[in-house]
Length: 505
Image (cartoon, one colour):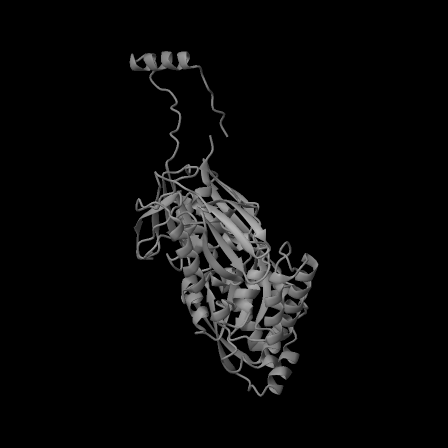
């Protein structure tokens, strides 16, 4: 790296004068600070409606457009956002003071009615994917005599309520998802059919202005296209990038690789409404056919992943090595399938996204040895996400991200039986239901101590290892590719937000 030489203002002016007079025929000019950045994500966002999705890439992009009442810092500390302060008059009452002087991107001023309407929409709208974060909420109303204060009441003590509120975006009254209007640091200025977005810095933003005036979001799902864009320098930040890509492609020297701590578990899941996957012996047979260590070695030879021994990764509340890890046993798998009455050659569908395709081919081979025929279908992630919510699949490979470093959101949204009235199981497209597991999950928020919460979570996770609606496969490592002079703030358990991108001086 070349050093930059700084000279005094008088000396600089003298050199400029000489240059103008022809006394200097060539001189180095200080590079201009860039005002725009192009960011490549691995797949397109699944919705422009912040309440209609609970998916990591989408949430990361939309975090620059919409804002919650409180937000998480990169190290997972709850900090003020559209609520400037809060108090807890009792274990079931939370009062939040709404920030004044905030404007939506269409020029409207943020009001308490917007906040109340957003929370109620996230909780009660039938299409909400974020209602589970508010599952303990029993009331949302104004505080009498306090025009800028609201109160949220819960049906039980909910110590994680503030953390969960970070996942609930505030939108204007009469919100139209086709016109994505929020209060965030960036506003949408254009959208294309292929999923790319152009964001522009919001001139009336109430908080700290982001460093870049314009952010272009590109969707780059194929490794070949990514290699072309990186080689040509057409993208500035890539979120995420695999170690395998870095090892197999020549990355120009102006890019830096930043490792981030990803709190993600990739799992093989089943639609229990589809024959023969509703049979517990069949799911056990599939588990017996898969050697997780061999899968990781085969699918990720560059060391991008490690075998999973739990539904939650280390560092997430609730982690314990609850699921047994064993070598593949095709004979035992075949015997279990025979006892389940499943004839050899029975066919099942296996739906995967591009990122999970390497694992899918190992799974296909493993199941063939056990006597099952897996038909792999590789689709864009947003398609997989939609079909999972509808239960329109047989088996699938999906990753769950733990942005709060807590297992409760996974258990409430993905594992609890689907009960919209309770705002639970909203992403459980598998048809899984176990009354005991539901009971443990429902008792977690009211647990008096962390030890009591942990015990309930462990009860649920151990039963999952027996029921196997999902089989934990591996934990992926994650990296970000950043071109100089750009910088990024690394977040635990989440991708980089557009407003996290800066420029080094």
